[in-house]
Image (cartoon, rainbow, N blue to C red; front, top):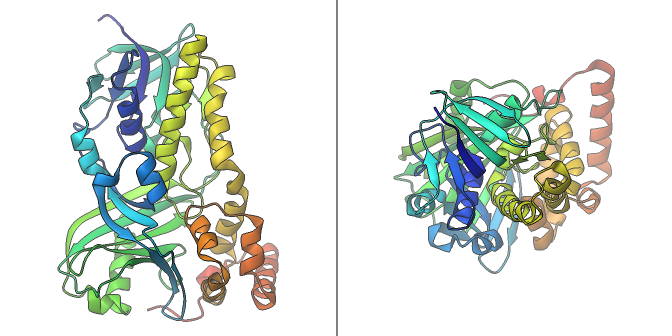
Length: 410
């Protein structure tokens, strides 16, 4: 079986892979898109809330489900901060019709399982389940949390990562009052992350949850948390009591500093495969798109120079660090405190003190552009004192206050 040669091979037809394929489509590059599933038309996780800035940048306006001009941060129905932007600042986008509308002239291999990836004399060889060999100058890993190319090339860094799961429930038959805002809802009686609520109309919405973890969660127990919340908590127990589930998605993604290289010889990584889920709120959609753009730009530079080594491809990593990397350390601090130090008391103070932010500052938080100024706005003497005491308890005894809730279990 003779080897097939390509300039670029994209592994994975998620958000990053499809957007990069679209950008490379119709160019002079010989491109192959490899997907494990038997379709590239139905993305696994496909409805995302993001800024209108990103929607316009990537020409996704026609795929908007709902626009929002504000959002609220609610803690356990006790504390709430609301922000209004005076314009449509955010929207929920459905990537499925985007995928279905893609007309790709490049090669696509679906139902393909990768059995081996190896470097071979300045190229990368990919071998599928049938023994077919594909040779390429640049392989782009867009394989999501499986990170299949990175694993075969030995580029996974040691150390346990903090990841997040997310559940998205698309609901119909709701009874929702007219709303132009979406909500994040934190409640440590249920989970250490947050719920979110995107009201599309009086009858339809998306209700989801996300939680940080270091061990793979039990899917059934995570579904139970979201169902229990909807059943017990106002106003959702009233708004959603007669709703039916049209669709549900369970997704695992990275929420930690990158544990893979973004650029090596003949190699680029994008989106979740780069370990690059948005660090604070998990909006991987935005980073996935931005990294596809960066990969496209880097590929063009590499072919202009005829240099496919890390020395040239490092531009991709530099692009990421410029846009996102500088915010990761602050996000790591937040994750550490939420997972290990926060009790319900601290989360309630967090929600209350969020009201000190300006609308623009709140917008920056939503897209994970967290700076030191955020902490100065959020922290006051009581909040800082509680955090310090909990931190001392954690360091001395290794206790996790998040398991000792103020309000008890529902």
